[in-house]
Length: 418
Image 1 (cartoon, rainbow, N blue to C red):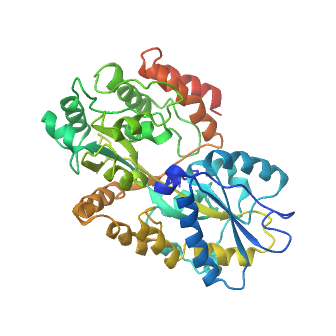
Image 2 (cartoon, rainbow, N blue to C red; image 1 turned 30 degrees about the vertical axis):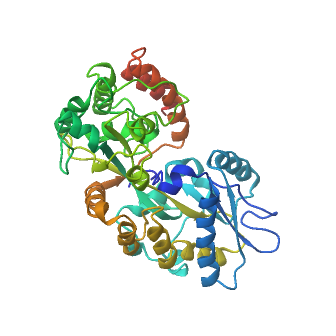
């Protein structure tokens, strides 16, 4: 198993929310009056309303447990989490983005099979690979509430107008290049490169069959196959001229914004944004397909978020009951029915597709089925967050032709490798 699993960067909720402010009261896991605090991210009133609907389900299923939801914007959460971790003041139920789990692994109580049983859960409840999201160093540190992976989204209108081949299930990287080249015109790019962690890494990982972290948890940015694939990716801008260079490092959603604005025919993003792209403000007809297949097969990662129990939680038994309800059938069904996220609980997943318009339902399900068919857990190092923070601004220089991808990867490896 990989050293640590990720996100679902998450879902539509994850795309807009931020992890919550942590803990309250004097204890590590709750308040002085025994309340079980649940920390979660929320970026808007509608997000908070949705979380309160989940809270209502939790309270109904646990009438003898006092549960309090505590939220804060995504950008604030991890700063507060770090502060509260150092002071031992984490909420009993602390939400965690899987991609960051390795950094905060020491904060969570490992969960045993007996713990899952006490929470009314079984490993069999979850979709294949889902538990990897909250697993690090062989230990299950929480349970996922959603799962995600990366897709290629495409603008059917631009592709049709250019006469380029439309992406289709089972496509190859040669097919990808043919579409990108065919859809590139004076008015728009054929593809939009990304700056975000998996918005740019997904295609190099898929093409090379290699993650930038080895199976034993060591940083592997300079793995030759991954470097070659990353150079190919940068060459979509500098050599093949099918993508535009990113404007600046501060434009973190460069590729996604180029696509959603109708300025690029394709972009890579997570399944969590499927519903958003289908209803894009630019008014184009959106499609989606799994990542293309490389010579080594199709390597895709399962991402997501989940909930863990903080070490030192004063009432672990009550926390397990709350945890079980947060990812129980009723809560997962409600989340899936709303279309907010693709649930981690296998039996709830069909409801997500039922929430979509009938005209796109079958196409979205086909794309999801293909994308999740053979996912593997993300591996990461304990300083993975720092690695990505260092890489992002340098990607702009690579796309602008001012730096070489191999040099950027090598320098980052030297700085953060162990």
